[in-house]
Image (cartoon, rainbow, N blue to C red; front, side):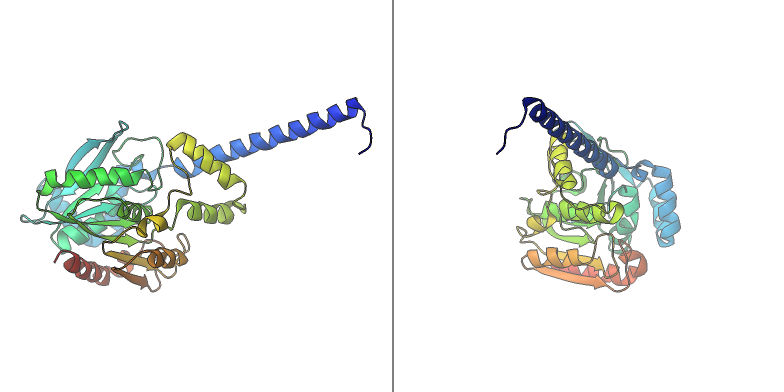
Length: 322
């Protein structure tokens, strides 16, 4: 290697170091922006009145049920505090008579418990079950400073599961039913050690993992590959929230689940692509069932086929509650 003047060598080193600083600063800024964009979006989940109006307009069949609940003060609020000091809210409704059968219903991304009232209607009005509908962190009446994409939420949902007997009695039997991010949360819960009164799970259009979902969104919305931004954003998420995109995997969690699970996914879903249900379904040991809903885009299967959806859930619950 030829001789290089110290002045030139120093200039090259300073230039390379400056470029490195610029690249790191850009990645850091981009990672923080990505976290704010995805975990702290404009949060319609805090718009309680707007959410209720949306549900009444979108699902007119639930209006008499909601009116009856409000008239008889049967829609009730309850709160718990998480181990890290976050105050969490849920709605609950008891069945029309003492029943063991209970559904824990988990909402999706930027939604809240109110925006799962159609599934609440399914279980409470159509099947006459008890229902518990948590507001996940940063939504509804729950505290929190960011959406947690199901991974940290799984622990909160488990806390609600353990609180359910105090609301509905010690002899309850329960299923967990989630849609979209709530379905991913449901699958993430399924891989944990749970009390024996949990009998099964219904997941409707949940993603395989936070990594897969963010990788897909990064490509579609910004035209960017996973490397390097997704890797650095995952590290920042670990620093901010205590979890990273890779570990937040519904696919890994369902592989540990031995309880029955009913998978539902629209065959026209391009937000959580339909191929994802095939991966989580393949990862799940028996017993399991799959319904790929014809013509359904993301999270609209019940809206398109309310009677068939209800009957399939009813049949699944009859088998798991026998």
